[in-house]
Length: 607
Image 1 (cartoon, rainbow, N blue to C red):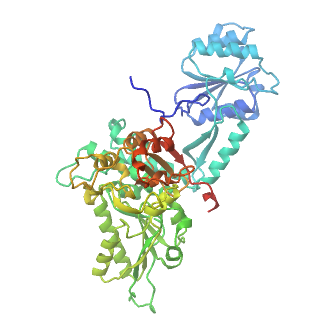
Image 2: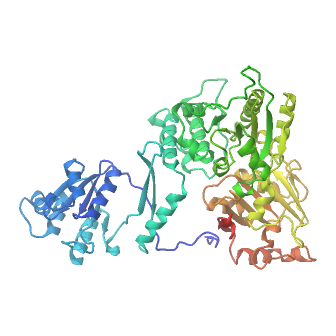
Image 3: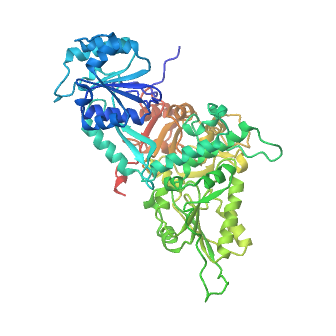
């Protein structure tokens, strides 16, 4: 049996298995009468659980909140004496004996929360009694939480926040929970508040809108458990697998229709800004599921009107700007792009990859449309956007076609220039910071470096309509940057390393298996992730780190390790190639096959 490589994470105890329980038609049993018991009851009620509270003295001794919930028939409150009589038919002086009989006679109890062990409780349960209750529940296979006794807990409560709909104030289905696993409850609460403060107000509403859209996408309950219909829940590592297109030549089956529609839900969940998701109407959801190519981020706002000339129905000629938004971080916008978005635009036609932080700079009165340009429908979406730009410009509007990175670096700007020119508009192309250079830099990788990389090449990992493209062959002093190739990484690696690959897929020599490679995802954004490995191990590495975070790029070559730690700038010295395996081992660590770095480089929080 082969030994697991050191690059797989070693399990380190002390964490918790974080789960979310659905408690419908199940009962939570709470022992205690104070505010903590009320808090546990409220959490259980929000999880659709029935709640029974057992307290010395019954309803007369519980806190005001539990009394009110009892009056509203939200909880059932039992006195220990009543519990004893219900369980044994006679009064018992031992609470543990009464509880044992009650658990044996009662079905559907899922959890037991012992809250009367809290410090300061007037009727505080002692340690010995808590232990007996804990072991009794364990015999009945019922998980227990015992306050202030971590060793008597099968589960613990996280510091939880449930988000509200920012428009209606209604509580939504989105929750977050933070736990320090007993290392600091107050700190967990503070961290939770910090996380909540960083998220946009619309995040709860967005969650509920996506839930509504999922229900619209599924044709019947019978398909609900089909794995192919759940791709937006993380079962596939990449959200960039092609969206199946609607069948025109024949009637679609129910399964085909549902699969296509659920893939639209996955794409929209991944790419659209949260404010847009939160504002979706049912009509817009149906349009998305039907395959319309773009939609406005301000569905209730009227489209911008062309300037009036003394009330005559004559519109001056508008104009079209092809603008690059850079790799994603708003601080990397050029002044020209910032001006176009904040001062010139009447209508913004944005690619899906432009992040919400950039779109947020656009004034509220400017209409924004986001392309549904996803794998499988790129051509149709591209045509729709170009037609929309021309139509708006003919109405006298200034149209900004907003593209990720630089418009002319795999941004299809050339096609749009020719299209707009053929329709009477000479567009202005505004360069942007290209992610092909900025992405590696933000990952600590120079695309050129004296002694390591004398040149670099940029190519795409997928050709028109998904066809293979020809990648450059191996040259030791060259860095290869591949855009739009992460979703088909195995094919890219095969084309690079296979010594007998056909010339149509690689021009030149094959790459050594030990060649360093980096996969940079969400470059310049707070959730940037950089995976570094070698060509022989990178496919396994990517599979091991969880679902992908588009957009991503690939960097291949010795520049990947050039600035790591103390640096290695002797790659081009005579005889250096003989030391490559050792060089890689020193870089990754002995017996390690890859390394992952989360977040931006130190210092970028300044911007």
